[in-house]
Every structure is written in C-alpha cells, then in structure tokens.
Image 1 (spheres, rainbow, N blue to C red):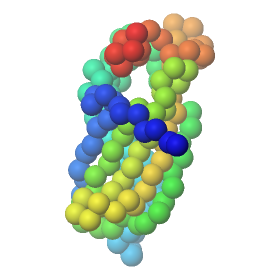
Image 2: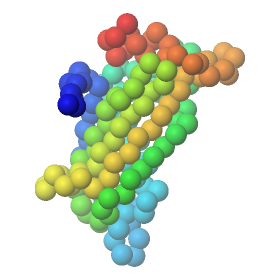
Image 3: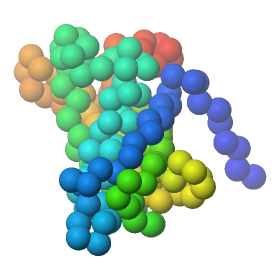
Length: 143
C-alpha cells in the first residue's frame, strides 16, 4: 500500500506561464533547454514561499548550486500555450531536491516532469555540506 503524505502548503508553488515566441523553434515547439528556465521560475516562487530565496541563502552564508537536473519530456510545449509549472520540496535532510511538473493549464494534461538537486556549500570555505544547514530546516518548519 502506498501512502501519499501531505506536504505543508508552503512546500509547493505553482506558476502559470505562456510559452513565448522567442522560446520556440520553426515548428512552434518550445526548445528543450527552455524547460530549465520554466523550472527555475517555479523554484524561485517556491523559495519565496519558504522565505529563503537566493539573496537570503547568500546572507545565511550558503550557496545552493544545482548539482543534478533531470527532465522527462512527455509532450511538447507549444507557442502561446498556457501551462502550470509546479515545484515542490521532495527531500531536504542532506540536499534540497525539488520535483517539478508541467501541465497544460486548460486540460490538466501532464506535459513534462523533472527534478533538481541542490546542495549547501559553505561560502566561507567553499566546502559542500553533507547535511542541510539548520537555517533550511527552520525555514521548512522541521527544526
């Protein structure tokens, strides 16, 4: 039996985007590299909801580089299509893993999914941490 645990509201965020002309090829399909930008827009919205955005990360003494990125392209995004990009915290103890889903706004059909993994790096000495720093745990409400 699979039990789906409910995430706190601030552990997920959604943004609506319309695929712009400058993101598509001659077939009016979004170039695969732009999906990363759409993930980033949703991730920044999520980090704002957590009250731990990139400037706050820097102020706390940690950089959070993306060390892994996966994307599964199920169906193409097309010129002028409205999509909903969801980002949600999947893991936080040793790294920050964020899952993404891109759905058509009108039909709800899933178009793309993926995830990113970020790790905390101490900005003072440049060393990667093997456990998430207390500030992230506090922002997530699990400390």
